[in-house]
Length: 278
Image 1: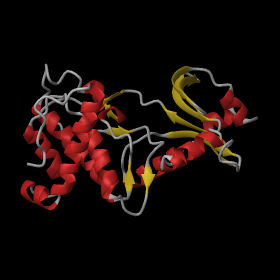
Image 2 (image 1 turned 30 degrees about the horizontal axis):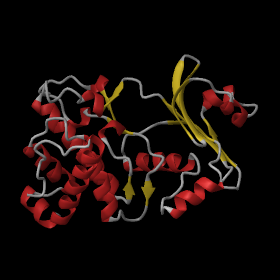
Image 3 (image 1 turned 90 degrees about the vertical axis):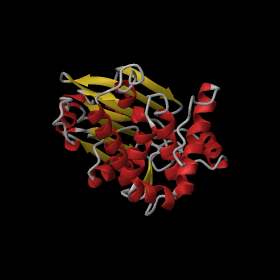
Image 4 (image 1 turned 60 degrees about the vertical axis):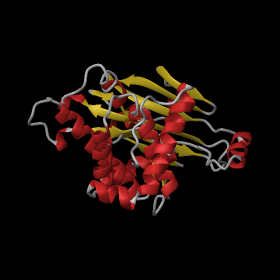
């Protein structure tokens, strides 16, 4: 058994943490086989709980047959949070974690994280950019920040697997949107890490899937070609011509992936797709 409880949960759940977790009530955000995500309150503070109750052997076998790694509990997300913290990437803050059971089909686990108060997803923050473009300086900083986080993940053997702008949460309390706004004022928390993979080196196909997903999720924001080029330079750390020349196959894969995802989701191709590999 593994168990970590921050002070407030040591006091509240001291008798039986796993029984306490089962009794937590709150606003359910997602409920799938063996896993529930909900928001709850303790001592006037809000938290998110991911509660895993075992997926069963049929679900594990189904994933393995499809060559997918099954999600067996909270450990993957807990480990991913620790790794991002080591790399200096803002993410969730763990308040409690527990795991018990040797059988992967029935293993129980939970993860409690602090509510990201004062933040908004980039998807919501950028939702009206086509109709109401943001300050240019702010847009440039956000692009550079997302590209830098992406490079940090991929250069250190991590890939997210659900890499969309909705999984970046922006701390809006740090913004003043004035000309003096600096890159350090842009605080983005990367969330939803339960599918993250960690290796010594990120395979190119998984980096392409991440950046392709990011590209897909940003296609309707009214970004210009020069914005995409700005991302490419920041992601590679190279001048634009070199970034394109050295990674032409990568960017072609990103473009293909993004357009395929957009077409599949919207049942139509994106309008005027940005040819990022040209």
